[in-house]
Length: 212
Length: 212
Image 1: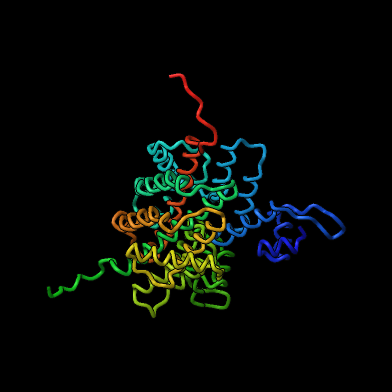
Image 2 (image 1 turned 120 degrees about the vertical axis):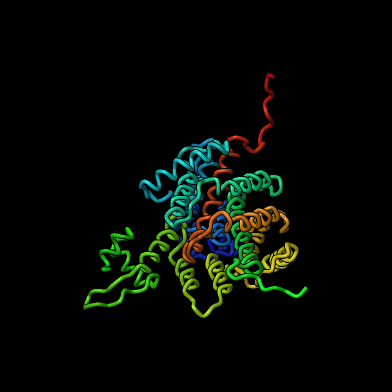
């Protein structure tokens, strides 16, 4: 199909398609003539994935690019490719170091060991968690990694339930699903936050006695 | 204190401080002479919050700006301010409409009703969830909003447990805590994903019989 047809089918304007090709997110079409190229179903699929990741998935173009690279890497066995895709969701943590961060890293590594999770020593999740713990400490919030245990248990349950309930037909759909479910959970957390705050505000003032 | 002292105490370089002031994220100092201004403790606190939100909090400057505006709005009662801060975490959803999105919105609203959560009809979480559900449908993943119920329950438990375990000393710390715990959960979800994928890969091939 021509680029105008691709735009029509995918709902993505031609200039945006050209931008995605220049940015390396989408493969160029097969040249058929000067200034003309042929596009296929794989372009439709890829465009749909990009639109979902940057739209409801709320990812930056840089993150999308890392995910697509992982998805396309042919030199990897499936397990490696899955891991690379997950890793791509989390950008490299800042290189911030210092006594506080180093100590937080030890605490986080120990916590992951206690969970019995076998994840790579370089997993970006470890660094992100380390930065979070160090930042909480800097804010004067005293806690150790055990404060994350309910999160770990909730995450395990969610991950275990996902594939059964939501089979994804393709590798692209599986990636999109992972991203979308992350957004869904974050939405839930904010809605629950709002509900709780409006209906059960922090006990700043003593409750007024009610006639009963 | 002078800007050079502020930079030293906060660890934020002078040009970055000036950029934050120009961007409206940080109040200007009190002018004391031509090309000189006085900064106070409130600048240190605010800089620390900005660094946490853009660093481990992984927020864009635009999101940080929305959060700080909500935090600073003096015309609001505390409940409204809390809600505005939560809302600021989620940018306005895209205006994408269409039969699929409209139907997803009805499903999501009905689901939130069934949860018994009283949240505003305009809560950004509703729109985000709607976009997620519509995108899952476009991917060919058939599901209704009930698929999010474990998320809702996990979110409720997490929100209920937070303040008890992690008292935040200031409004700034409370905002940072909310953002950081979101990142912590997302890290947990990715680590759990990695653990599961490497140790319990999708059953693509029948399991080899093991001598036992």
